[in-house]
Length: 354
Image 1: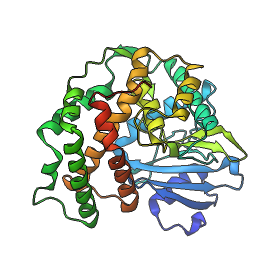
Image 2: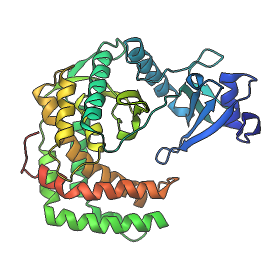
Image 3: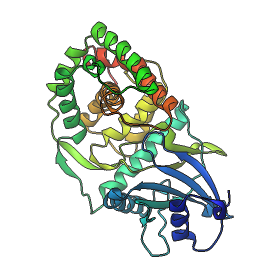
């Protein structure tokens, strides 16, 4: 669709902030199924000059600016897989549209994501993450510091809450009733049965008792899903781009590895498969993991299964959050339910070496 034909006033205003009076072809990439953001590709005639515009609530402006500074730092350090942040005609990288939203523009990255990467692709992805971590560690705005990883602290707090408010309680009468809610409620029943069979309460008690020693914390991406790692179409073992940095924060580098490796489709067992072991080896060829970081990778992966499921149950059945694509939500929930037995058993003490 031509920009001149777009009826969305906010989007038109945002495009004007970067393009001025020029017309362009606008392609809806997605309305993010989970965040609610609008994401469009603005085609300017030259694919290398195409932009991706994304909307956010106006309250997110300070955080977006921080993320843009991080992305700019990473590219300046040679991490060309990070999309270039593009300033608008006013000189800023965050633009208000007058309708209560703000927008960013980054260069479009062409590539293909893989849920089931080959060993070579896994190695390439992990090596790219290692280079990102090395570059981020040199960012003066968020210098490395020693502390307990926030990801660990959050999990301990969530385990305490789950012990006092088990999943059965989200099914109490008076909860939010929607078609998505009904479908998720059925998953709660399924997950609760698995929890009883596998000993979820004991696993949660182990999480509460976790005493992670202080480690090195730095800026990390935190949301490196398989869908966010794009490989070049003509060179499928080369990482063309890593997209969506808006969950970035200061935490342990292990969080990125756990997120990425855990998002790849694999056998149900939590101990990592061949492609994941190869990925860790490739990562460590560039940045050596500490013993604690290496221990945290599978621990963060296993706990993310339990607490990710808990988040979805409470978001939908307690808070009544709305999501544009129910099918994608249920797909994510089903993946987590499928991994729940092994996550609980692994955390319960029957651990295998990474």
